[in-house]
Figure 1 (cartoon, helix red, strand yellow):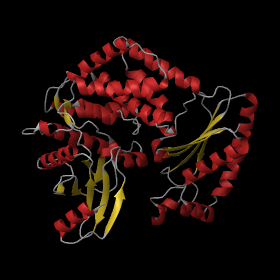
Figure 2 (cartoon, one colour):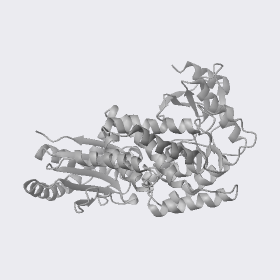
Figure 3 (spheres, one colour):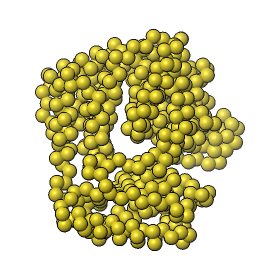
Figure 4 (cartoon, helix red, strand yellow):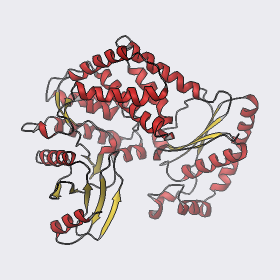
Amino acid sequence: MYSQLINLYTTLTGYPPCEITPVAGSGSHRKYVRMRGSVSLIGVIGTNRMENDAFIYESDFFSKRGINVPSVLAVSSDGMAYLQEDLGDKTLLDVIREEGESERVKYLCKEALTELVKMQSSTDGFDWNKCFPVVSLDRRSIMWDLNYFKYCFLKPVGIDFDEPRLEDEFVHLASCLENASPRGFMFRDFQSRNIMIKDNKPWFIDFQGGRKGPLIYDAVSFIWQARAGFSEDLKNELFDSYIDQLSEKAPVDYPCKKEIIVFRMLQVLGAYGFRGLIEKKQMFIDSIPGALASCIRYLDRGQYPHLATCLNRANDEFVAKEPAKELTVYVTSFSYKRGIPEDHSGNGGGFVFDCRAIHNPGRYQPYKKLTGDEPSVIEFLERESDIEEFLNHCYALVDASVEVYLRRGFTSLQVNFGCTGGQHRSVYSATHMARHIAEKYGVRVVLTHREQNKQMIYPAKV
């Protein structure tokens, strides 16, 4: 499978790689591997020659202008495989999950926006015809995304919409985006997962879908991305920082800021609909209510009344599908650096257990990259700490509430376990609590490891 990459590596360095390790990729079908030997490089096997050509051209163009992007060092004769600089494993999303809204996170986010402005404004001599799959964010490509939302989200949810009215509002939204200024190189998928941290500086990857478009689209995609979970204050601080820097390069007019936020969230809902409602992946289904609420918040009902009606109906549909008379216990592990999880039921209350007094396996090198669900970490905690005694006290407290909630017909109970990084002690505790409740009471339990973006649901036993 990797013969092309091995040949490229050997030709480039003079020696074959000693080790080849798969690297997790994005949502595309490209394959990534880390190739170690005399030097560590990332090998890429693409599925579309034009997509590869776009990345290779853009990488060369921007690296020559001092932008932090990986250099492409070797390309196969058929253009389907190439070697690029290895930027390491740490993404900005990883840092955000570990540190929350720390000063370092704020610094790195602002540095990423500074580098983005440099990239967006360094386009003299850029060949726009190299962009993939289209040269610019035009009305047609905008409508592709809006129709994706329509047919992969609204249709599967079962929302009966007026096609002509919705199309008219989509055309109006597309017109706003199409005419937004200033325009330049639009990264298009600018988010913390696509920003690597190397030497405490941001480096950009996965920009092969870039094209000409409204520049603030990238800033909005980054600042309002759901995975980062930025507070409103930080969102405003980052957006103001970006606008101040961009204004030094070109006049900035952004009356369509809310339209861009809504458009980006409609794209997300389309993706959640496809992955969740069509491909039946529960994590995406569970993410839909939050995305709907955010979209409704920023939508101008006066300009887009039918879209607002459709979104509200979808929101009602998901609220209606929540168990009305059955108890669901939400068990979550989290990092205190990112704050205590929100109460989405609106009822308040519940439990927050602090695991930081328990001996931390994360202090030891063999366990640093593992979680509390890994066998070696479980063994360490049960051998070297008093976590089992700690959990027995937690069980007694939570059991008492579950029994009262069941008698009184309450529908939601929240149980949170926090530690420093939300990775070891809290994960172990949350997993064991979820199993305990599911096995003892047979109620529906939603287990979420927030910092790992993982979720598991124990269905109610009939």
